[in-house]
Image (cartoon, rainbow, N blue to C red; front, side, top):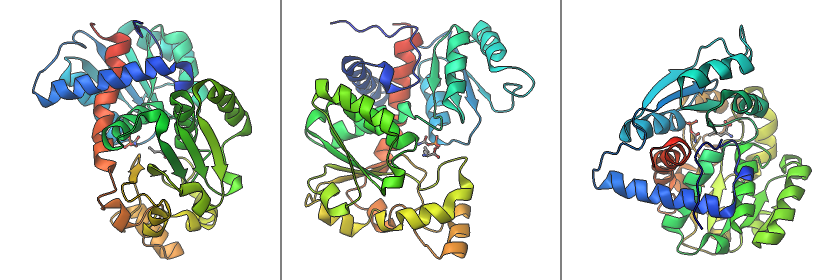
Length: 331
Ligand code: CP
Ligand code: NVA
């Protein structure tokens, strides 16, 4: 079956079939090999790409920029536009759509990404909203394929932490699509929205995925192939540290948790940035206020042989390139 994603938006993996996701992962692998052997491409030549960032970023911005450069595209970084302040998102979308071939958006409300997509007339790629972070999931799944020697539909992934944030939602959606065993390990108050979970459980009936939520660490992690965590406090929620620390302190990813998987080859993933030491301003503030030297993951696990976080970070480049090439590329 031939897959054609030209002209499509990339707002959430909900909009993509398992075959389309597989296609993007295969394309990412091909583009990674192409870069490794030193081939410069022209798949994005004559394409203008605008990157809107209403929140900070290291990986996502750099992945979009380098991916575009590798394939001959041009990028504009836009972080201080009139959008939503002096000009509506609708009007901004129309203007950008007249100049650019593709628009990346990182912001707060997911509805802003949807409005851009509705009016732009060119593909809009979600570079993270409060609700979803779909480009990250492709990098995560590519990393799993590289390091866990099983097909995705045999993989058990345990996501530990704030299971109702953009990462928790998006990993659960991706797992449901690809027939994986997903466990959200968190106190009940941080489980994903029931409506979304039920929607994905309905889909799981077709893909044979298992979608579970669990409070008990031992039960959740047994037999896991992947332990995944994210920051306890997402961008825009910085006033929540006290509550989240109370809720998630017991759910830190540490050696004891990895041992409980009974799988010495379990891999550790994190979308990054991570609070695993005191070498950050925020980490230091939290240390002063709450006495923690590490948060969601210990430094030992972060730097251990189980950790594949930097392969995962590199894969942001190859997978974001695949999304742009598939939706606007000169294929
Ligand atoms: N994982 C991720 O989205 O990283 P950045 O916030 O650095 O883009
Ligand atoms: N949940 C995190 C993800 C960062 C990549 C955040 O939104 O800040």
